[in-house]
Amino acid sequence: MTAASRHEIVQGRALAARTVSPDIATVETLSRVQELTGASCFTSRTPDGSIAGVIAIIPLRAAARSQLAGGMFDGITPPEELVARPGEPVIAIYGWGMAGATWRGRATVMAGAVKLHREIFPTLPLYGRAATPGGERTLLRRIGAQAVPGPGGLVVAQPWTPARRAA
Image (cartoon, rainbow, N blue to C red; front, side, top):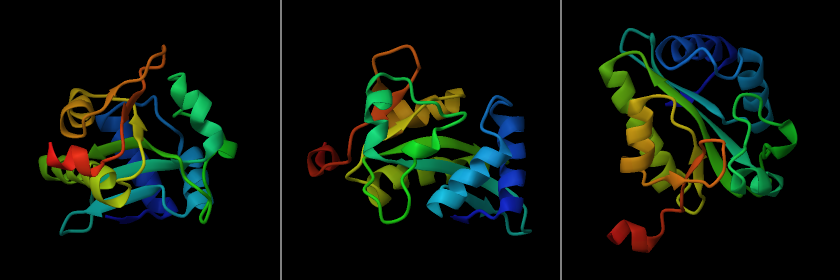
């Protein structure tokens, strides 16, 4: 997967709206967070160059802790002041969204989500919300997330520690 350009964000958001739900972050919001972080939206391409899958994440600052603990983080319009910029401490990753255009694209995205948690950010908790049965299976079964108390439907997978690796 590679960092998404504005054009790819437009295409990826259209894919996610079509395959997941239209009630997701806008292109403007996705682009703004990509601008702030330099690494929030990613795409995978098919051999012919079309988008096969997309993943979007948000690295979060310490100021997000209370919203996460209360299960109320706003994933549709995330407050910019909670988004970590390059070089700033990150206390958690929010799995903003993922979508695949084909079975292979969905499998690549699901594997990417697991890799994000276990290899790229193994010391950070991963938060998210499942919008589809496949997303729920990935979060709860493959990544091991648990519900966060509160009304927001938020789940969290604790850091991927050596003890969890051995289990």
